[in-house]
Image 1 (spheres, helix red, strand yellow):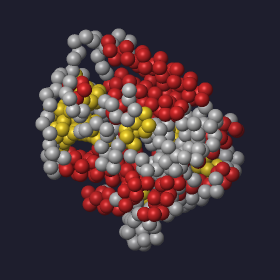
Image 2 (tube, helix red, strand yellow):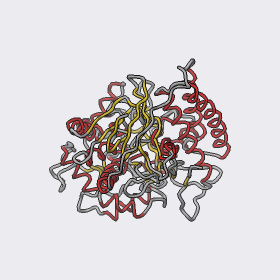
Image 3 (spheres, one colour):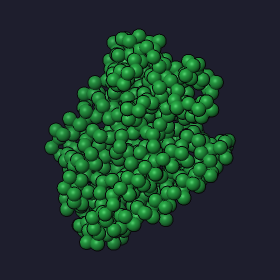
Image 4 (cartoon, helix red, strand yellow):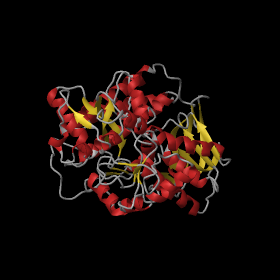
Length: 524
């Protein structure tokens, strides 16, 4: 057994923010199932929304967030996030993040516009903000003597007081599979932080990396934590449609800088769906695209930014320009084929303003958590803002707590399991899950589709439980186990919502109810 004062599961912006704000005073371990930069934060293109210009205001940012969130944003949480945005960005700047400069701007940085925003307030590093932030913080993490990074460690389950027979509910650590050594290790901790990201890989088409398998949400639920609003899965409207492009996102900022969505004949269609046209919030744009594609039998639609100069595109969108060129698409001269794809999990483990879950000693931050900021639909570039603001809040809360005595934890018991005989079962189940979730629990839902999905989830859950009980764990099995549980939470939440709101659109309940309520699931 190894032990630390704080163990952070996940190495995206949320996890690294917590770590760097704790490390001067605590011994930290960052547990990541691949390598340090393999999370979704590293893929983020757009930027970080914060009030940085004098013609902008917190009230405006709050209003934009609430409008996008369709009445479900927690007012206190939203104000807290917005009012702490500038401090969070200034902290990143102090760490050395190379945001794109603009000498004519009063802030000294270029601020871009994105869908749903009423002002230019998105600070960015060209079109690879996440990568710039992550590589900067990664260097800080690797250099800090109080931070241990455990790469290729797949978390299995949290160790709670209930499992240890202790009277006071608390989280005491976790079991993790050392995927290189192929053995399970026991890690004790005074505090555990779930920062494992979202669950985009539950869908067939997603902008997320392969690591986005709902691990923290599933582990938190199994440990007894409540989850909220899991039905609200954001589908990013513009994922590159190309047989050789795996989950390549075309940033919101392309539309913010004047990109137009077109049918194959070059006709715009967004003005018919919303007065804000291409700058409408993501749920509206994704549904409009889905409607047009299904109505006309299209495989994709097109995003055209070719009216901008090649110099402008290379300066503002170098990653997108370069990747598209590699695939034979010159965005300075032709439109980009795009489709919607699962992008962001708005729900998650229920937390308070300090990232605390309902289990003492357990925190959740970033996409794993449900803070109440995003409501029924996340406003563009509020995700990295949430990681920063609530990551720093969680670190402050941990530092304010009296250190508790660390429990002695039992080793993982493998005495009654054997090696798996047919691992192809895992691959087949994974593929089946992602396909029926895409078909039945996608952008547009019906009661019948949700019932079909739930029936298949129940069958898969039984198979996976049997597999988990009899065979030694593997990384693929653990991810599939978490994905199926997360899918179950998504479908159960969707079945409870008898209306259409934000990202949840039901043909059986097309209207929005007068009162906005969260969907809360509590473990039995």
